Image 1 (tube, helix red, strand yellow):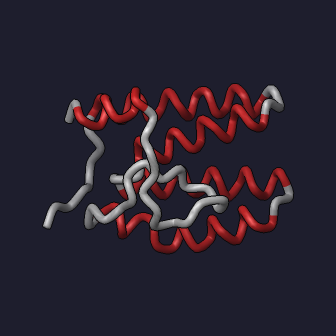
Image 2 (cartoon, rainbow, N blue to C red):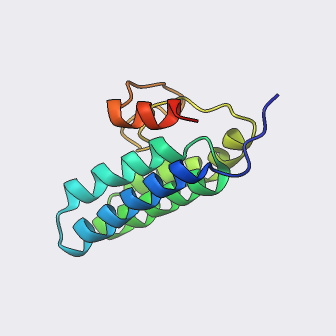
Length: 120
């Protein structure tokens, strides 16, 4: 069994870049663009407990700001189980992490992110 503890540097850089975009768009009230970059951060970081949990935490806070009860409750569930599933390398690759998709469903991955993940 593989244990994921520390994210590789190239993925950490890409993950942080997505969060920069998220903060920029969120600050400028471009909510759909902000959410898009949160989803991308989730895809990049979902195999690593800290980044995975952080993405869900940010999604939870986003849901609170949007007053979206479904997202808030959906993220609570993901916050409870997401990190340990990352630790044991049992995540559905490509899943965007939002409450609008089943939490265990693998999804098609954006090409640029797939290249990043394959560069490990």
